[in-house]
Image (cartoon, rainbow, N blue to C red; front, side, top):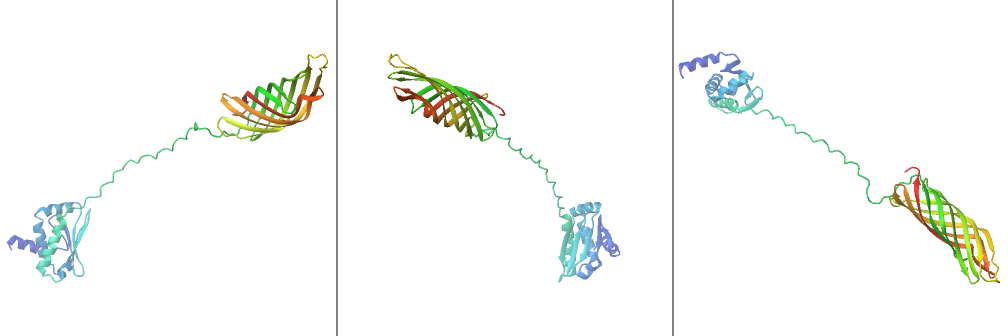
Length: 322
């Protein structure tokens, strides 16, 4: 050992428990001697190693306020480097010669100093979160036919009508005007109609005119967007005028006026043509329990009596709330 090394070892021998090896602060517990570690030799060996690359790490650690702590366990020595990223190691010295134990602890210290400090955890990049997708816009009304809401409205129509009494064969052709109120599923209908016709017989012909009125309860239930079927049950009655015409000199022609009345059943459909315009079709069945019937040659002839069948085509408008 050179004279300089002896002086260094003597200086370390009298150093307190807290000391510095170069630029590295050291706290060396006195118990290390009991674990077979020679304090002076440990300081000498570590100081020599700090002349190399490990010295820069020791200086950097000291500048950041770090230190080397050497303590004891039950059968060995603990080595701890404090600082921003503390590191720790345990060396078992049981059964080792003092020189071997000292060298092992010295190398452990140097390895901890030479080991690069773990890099601080990288900041997690803030990934911009995509905004939640906006809810899809409400779908537009489908172009497919869908049931139409049953809303309050009035439907006023006028058109052509054909009416035929079956048992007393007479066909009447004319026109009608009706009003249908449909506040909900149930509603009502009122109508007036008029027309005329003629019937030929072997003795001449019968010319007839009629005027009638209808009142009924209606039931409607839309099944398509523009198609509105309905049914009506009620009563229809009116007056009929029957006048006979003949060219025979021995035949007397006369005129008969009377009323007719009976229950009726009507079915129809209103089609929405747009711009509040309605086109309607209807079919009607009824029975005139009270009627007026002409007599031709002593027999019952044409008249407004018994079962009837009617039908018509109408055009109108829808009024009220849409």
